[in-house]
Image (cartoon, rainbow, N blue to C red; front, side, top):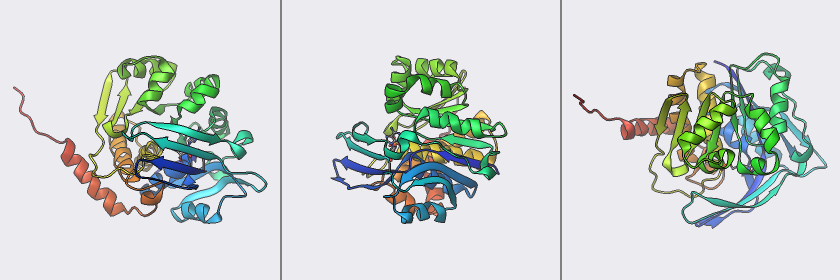
Length: 308
Ligand code: AMP
């Protein structure tokens, strides 16, 4: 079993979907990643920043899930990162209404001393310079570095993003962002171009249409579980990444074959995330529920065909 470092935003989100609207609720990439990774019974620590306005109860929520929050800096006089988004009727696309960096604007991350030798590093969505700085602090080379990002950083910090992408092993990115990053419509060509930027493994998330894992000429595809109800897709990508990273840390195996299972775990956890607003579903998700859905996933994708 490996240690996992999680970097990303811990945030307030305000979300609008065709089913309703929330005020400021708990959100952030590191929050969703942590909640997903907590299902693997591993040593995991979050590195992030919040303001004095952030309720201690939210940090306790992560600690109670066994996520070490000693690396989450609290800037008493500052305000927490705030993001607001509105989903379109198809629930697959959204508009960002506000991104207020607040304390994130001059955040210097500090990796807890006992996590500087972590085998797996999950660089969740936040400024690419912060992501790089976390890698600089690792005293031993991690076995696997996974990075997630979004269009916001491509728009405002592309060079920094390209610099950190050179240093990682796996990128998880959604289809629209892969196209933006490469200027290619075909996801196969986009994945090839991203390989050339650095990462040996490219995971392209396609929302309700599943996820693709590319490694050289190998491709693996996992569908998303067809769900009766989707209330709020916020955090599904981060939850996927947390499931992926958590599974790799738990199994300590970075082979392509094992990454396929990591994709399945990520997809399974993400399928829960979208069932309620914000982090609500992930807060109370049991390992039994996850196990049951993994079995459903297996049934959905398994077939026996005789080929002559
Ligand atoms: P996802 O739906 O997986 O893309 O992640 C949504 C989460 O990402 C929300 O909880 C937001 O707080 C967070 N988020 C939104 N924009 C950014 C950004 N520019 N940098 C870091 N985190 C962000």
